[in-house]
Length: 424
Image (cartoon, rainbow, N blue to C red; front, side):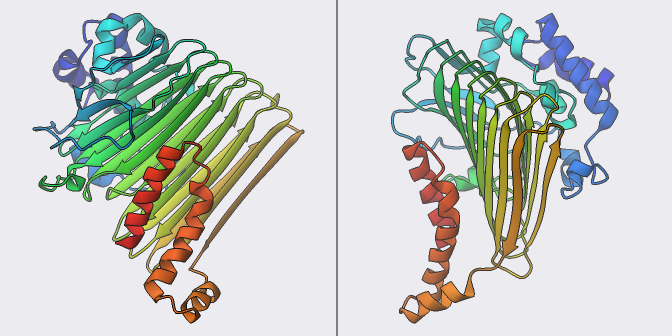
């Protein structure tokens, strides 16, 4: 799609099109995407993931709704529900100092705040798919926390999808010393009881997080898209002094999934803990990409991603830790482990360190293998059936990562989903 077609046919019909700064932001993003197009496998960061199948589905209109809204995952959560890209529920009582609303609503209620923060993350501004998201996005969620606010109730965002192409744009602004827990739940109508199967829709989401000094944001993503869907999600986080970011990705669904997390540790004593689990079967493909950028000194980062791959599935882990010249006294560690449950399954793991400072402690590691035959034999010799022995070994393998989820209610939800996957 050329910029002229975009500006004539698409841009005028998007929410907030009357805001000059937003129109310029979208137009510039559309021009950047038009100049590059979809990345192909000749691009190093995309060498393991082929996007040709989604090329003709990027501009399909979403038709109908995403189906019956399932109950909330967490008790007493503050909840927004988007069905096929449109906000359908979200009215609720909010504590003082907290704003939670749809992006389209924020374009009317708080355009000045969006103007100062939307699209300002350097890490993803020039990337093709975030640019396409910026150009095409109609809605998403906005969470604003004033300084010193601790949001006791978790925020649960449900994106329910069934057709077309969707571009959620999300923004989290955490004031100094604030704290919040966010669960982004991406759900295909296939997984909603009583709903007919979804088509091969495309979702391309971007979440920008700005954490001021001393803020703590815990973000958990649960990806359960429809079997034929393509899911691409990008997170860009900027951390000031003493800010803390905990992120956990659970990837279960979709035919093709790519989860990117970019973190800029810009202030001293900032910390980022990124963990994830990917469970794949049939011909599923999941690509996990992480870029941890230690901009300031005395910062800390931890990564632990683990996967179970069955049938003809394909997993990818690309993790990079960058340490800038002035970022002395940092600590960064990265680990990726995968169990191959089938001799047809495949994992590509590419850990990377780029260190330009002297006083650092950095490590990375990657392993791939099969279930422990010795452990399997031991359990079976104790009278445990093979299927149960296999399940116990898989559960033990994943437990070390699941235990790092600091929110007990979220951990219980993810434990249940993992157990259901292994049981099936």
